[in-house]
Amino acid sequence: MQRACRGGLPQVSQTIFLLEDDADISRLVRYHLEASGFTVQSFANAGEVLPAAERKAPSLFLLDIMVPGGDGLDLCRRLRLNATLSSVPVIFLTALATESDRVHGLELGADDYITKPFGTRELLARVKAVLRRFERQEPAETLRVGEIEIDGSAMQLRVRGELVTTTATEFRLLDYLARHPGRVFSRDQLLDAVWGDARFVTPRSVDVYVRRIREKIEDDAEEPRYLKTMRGAGYRFERADKISQVPAVPTEAAVERA
Image (cartoon, rainbow, N blue to C red; front, side, top):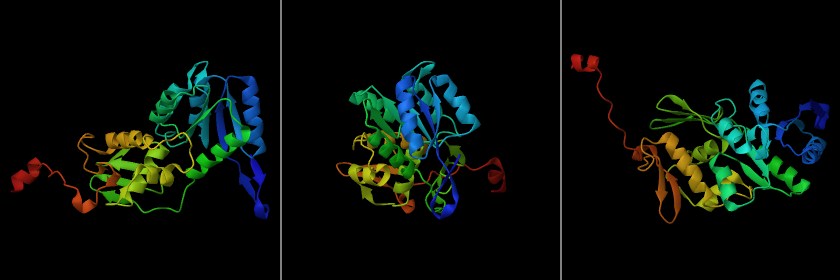
């Protein structure tokens, strides 16, 4: 689908996958999203979303939680394990409004969490905010620190040469910290830099993401070499010259040459 933009050139609209089994809510959300220039593909059953996304990935998933064919939480979990779709942002749109529900959604990799009932203006504002957060910036040079390689232009992380799946938010947080080595950031500073105006994310939510990142980049997440906790202050990504490298084990050929 194309829509006009300034200068008369066509602009391809962004596609949103909407999972919502309440027909009235689905029609309402779809109407306002399409009126704002988005293309919307609606689903009432969780089992239909992943196969459709694997055929053509959307720009964003907008997921209810309590739906037929599974649930939005399990779908989010499967999306985050899918190498092709793991970086696509996810917003939950749900009646589950407790703090534990929000934290659980965050732990699964959600990028925002909107509770019902909601205002359509707020919904549109938060959809646009999440999409802006994940717009491709100017290509960043590939950063190599110890055994970690961060390709900012492709949004890819490699650890010890192996491609590691991350969510878009995990990648942005790691990339931001790694490109400011040695600097201590408070949780509030990281929220402003990475999440912007996402309202459901609290300063302690940063801890959840740091834990998830450590599990992916550290040999021992309990004794991190790269992503350090500065007690009472926040977090710091260690400078390359401060990282202790584990000596390589000599190969048999090297031993024979010696």
